Length: 142
Image (tube, rainbow, N blue to C red; front, side):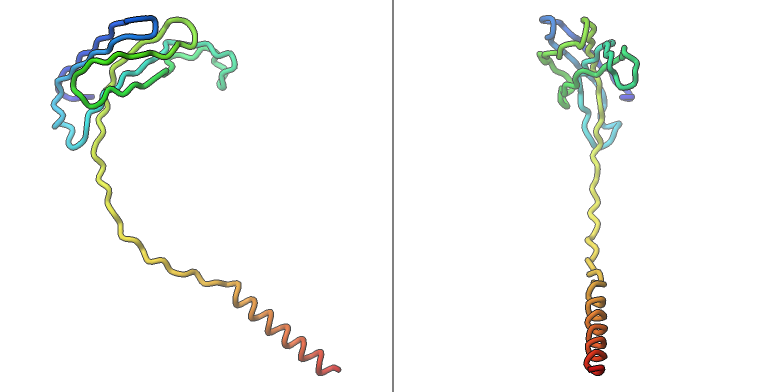
């Protein structure tokens, strides 16, 4: 929901896979708080046939073919090149607005790094001690 305001959108084909998009909005963006309102042109294919589709449907509806950013301008005109449809001639274009709030990053202080005890060293000392006791026992027997 964009709240209070109006938006208009026009599409004028200039070829099989091209056209001119025009849009205009009168939306009070202060109602959303800090951030920006971005406009996008969505290119959607009504349906496409994929015999080897992963979920076995074969006919897939509403396939997103492209998302074209129009920017954060409240009105404009743009020449657009459309992607080819998978099959048929069933592409449609849609104007979509997205509000992107400003996200405040809170810096947390770095926690001091504590050295983990090295448990391998006590084992080496224990092994050396056992070896010395074994060597002493062997020399006493001789």
